[in-house]
Every structure is written in structure tokens, then in C-alpha cells.
Length: 174
Image 1: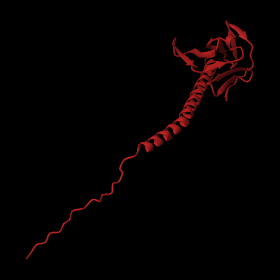
Image 2: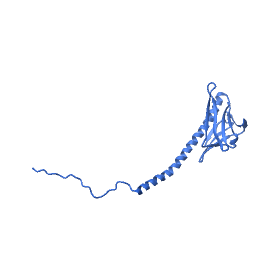
Image 3: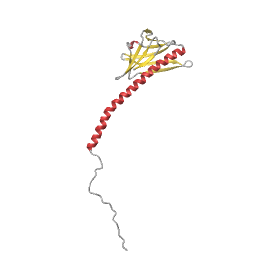
Image 4: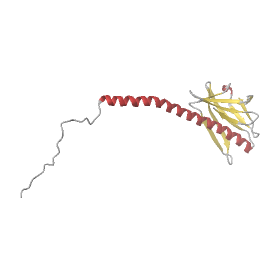
């Protein structure tokens, strides 16, 4: 008996197939990515700025509400110090009484935002009273403002914090 062998080898054809990508394709993909990036980055920046503005505005409103409610519950007048420059108000700070002789300090920095109001450079404090009323002052001299409108602004948008004298309400509006 004779054995026969079978040739099982695979023959490769002479046709060459390109496995990689050309320089032109790389340049087109890079241009598309750059175009998408140029559209999305400014949107993300504006979105972050808007979120930051909302956060800072809400913190200021919360501080005002906190001081107002603490003045009512402790039956003491409490004061928020207003720090400003010629450009406008950049910081609020206050100390609240806690148990015993201790106090808790609160400071809200508005940077990079500026808070302005009509004649904001002449306000250095806002005092809240136990009856929920308030007064704005400069060098301990009361300044009559009703309502007191404080505007926190950025390049693209702003928020207003409005204190109404007779309704005892503090509103944050866009």
C-alpha cells in the first residue's frame, strides 16, 4: 500500500491590503476633533461659570436667611459685615453666637464675581433685628434703602438678592 500525502499549505495571494491609515485620514480626524473641541469648550466654561454664580448667590442668600432667623431666635441684633472696594462688594462675613461664649464665623467670598448695588460703596454692614427687620449702614449710620437690591454679576449673567423692608423677605431672583 502506498501512502499519499496531501499538501495542506495555504498560498498567499500577491494582492496587498493596507492595514494602517494614511496621513490624510489622520489630519481629517484631527480637524474634526479640533472642531468639536472648539464648540464644546466655551459651552463647558459658560456652564461652569453659571453653576458657580448660582452657588455663590445661593450661599449669600442662605447667609442672609441664617442671620435673620438667628436674630429672631436669639432676640439679638446680628450684623453682616460687607467688605468692598471701588469695584463693588467682594465679601460678606458674620459671627453667630453659639453655646456659651463661643461664636461661629461665616465668610462668603464672591470672587471672581462682584456684588454691586446702587451706592454699594457706601454700605459696610447689614444689621438684622429680632423683629425680622433689617438696616443697611455705613460707619454705623443707617442708610435708608427700600428695597435693598444687591446684584451678583459675571460676564454673561447676574443674580439679584432683594431685601424688602416691610415684608421681611429676602429673595434671590435671576
